[in-house]
Image (cartoon, rainbow, N blue to C red; front, side, top):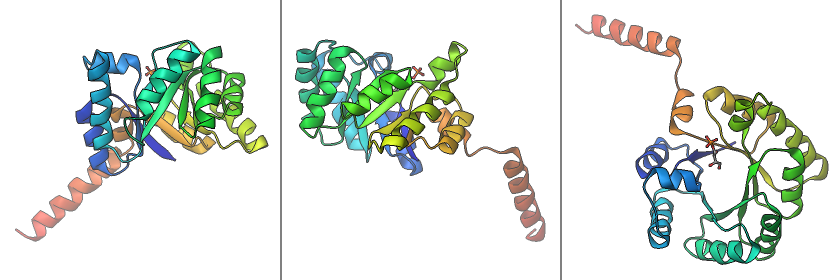
Length: 218
Ligand code: E4P
């Protein structure tokens, strides 16, 4: 299972990269705004900076919602670095853009997936990744992990190469359950990744080992 970090914060990306478990980065316009990144040149420079830190795919989202705009923006983003994956929203022109980029060999991530039908359509259009937002579904009392299960079955039934990128991950159990289901990738905050390493018995056990060592060597 690949681990992507879902942020545009360079310090957090570096921290996850230094941990040695990072396979990529996802961003979105809200995450870029959160870091105070605005204006086309600054946005492009920020993506370049992310690509310098991380070894792996970096999803950069288009703002346009029409086909021509998505193609124009996506081509500019893809030209920045071979790590760039053009992130495209699940709208009608987005499906056309997925097919356009797929035919050109440019990687894509279809975002804002909330149903199995949307995932199927994106896969048929040749998306490299589909991003079902599990946390946002859970937020409205809908089964986010159930959606990952459905998409897994559909993709396996037909041998789609499109990877399931479980997005909107909120906590470590989301990651563990996505891994059990067989999501190809998860993207979440640094806090969810770091929470995986925590267990109270590990802390208690380590404290005892160190105390016993100190006693024996005093
Ligand atoms: C996916 O790529 C999105 O950037 C992201 O996972 C959305 O997560 P949120 O629901 O926490 O905003």
